[in-house]
Length: 99
Image (cartoon, rainbow, N blue to C red; front, side):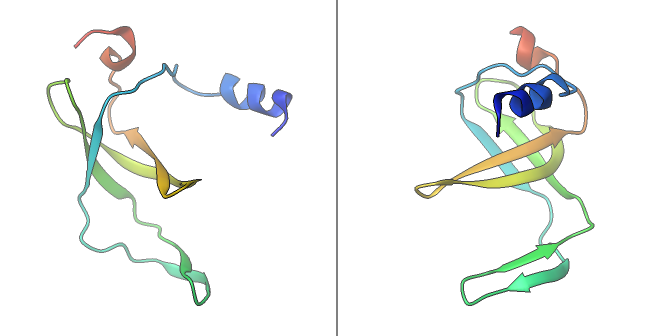
């Protein structure tokens, strides 16, 4: 991605992001995720689900459980996975340092 594409992407975000290094735990509400197969190989399958994947999110050191929807899973290499969750409600205290 070029610098101009990255800047455009960052500038169009709806909410401010801040660096964060705490522990996050998510729990998936669904027991089964059903979707339409797109392709398959000997190593895996790719499919599309039209049903939101609802999750509960806990951030260590912050009281309460937040609810949201899993919106992205990204292979980060070396066995690591990046996970993005969109909260159902806004939680401004996460970026302004309040609780």
